[in-house]
Image 1 (cartoon, rainbow, N blue to C red):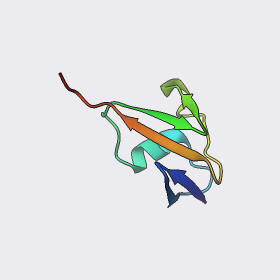
Image 2: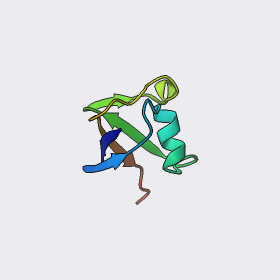
Image 3: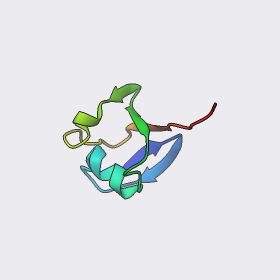
Image 4: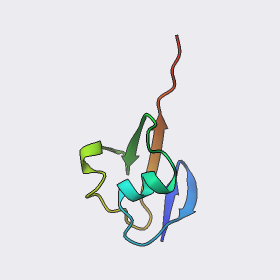
Length: 66
């Protein structure tokens, strides 16, 4: 199925959960937030939230600075 990931179309497996997307994109251990269709998804819901065709997914990564 196709989602929109950070503004670009991306093919992923049907019924993929957010937690599976995180693994697929090799984001484990990094600091980030995920927004789906303009709704921030808490990490506690990553394992239960399934993506749907056409979902707009934004991954916001934390950047250190000072």
